[in-house]
Length: 233
Image (cartoon, rainbow, N blue to C red; front, side, top):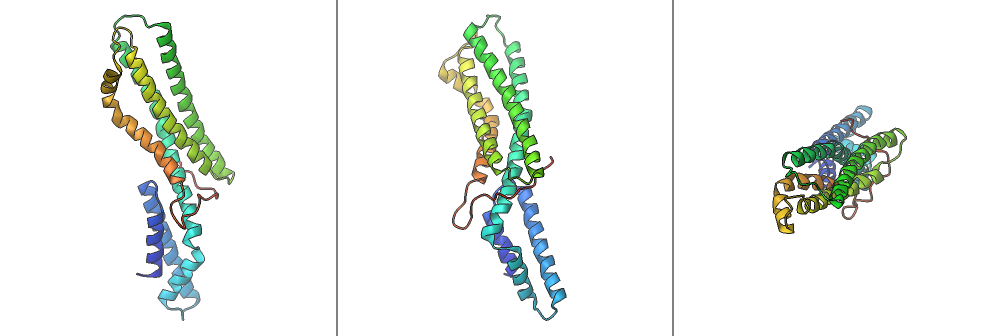
């Protein structure tokens, strides 16, 4: 295995994040190292290919310094994806819940307490959706100002996890107290089974943000504080 192949393989092993972005990143690094090695040979024809690759790798930097910088970029890409999904999905969840409520209404008026809880849940979903949209904007602003959005990645992850757990809890309570068709805790849990795949996906996105900003083993280092590019879509 050549010096470049060994370096790129180890970098690939250390990085975690969105597969497509990571694959593109690895290809860019490999191509850049090969270009650097060719430049070394062009400047010094007496240098053999193996030595040229070793020099290119040394100039690129040690993995303990390079890997955290790339990991930060992958974490930001994951946070962008998560914030975008939540900003779009939460209004859809609220709209579908309202339509489902109206289509299955029994005509029994809800109690004041139930009405307040349902209203509070709607306000929470609106506020959470706006919050994730603001996070998208902040990631752009921080990138332009050469500030690292890694801390914001953690905020997005925590916000996503809290939002999903709150939605699940509110759904159970509202199902149990639904006017004219309330159910037991077990009934609410069984009735919510069809929503578990969606909640599971949303929860996964949030947990993924938190995992990608966590140090990973010896030499992995802490997440880089260098600004990481923010995806535009």
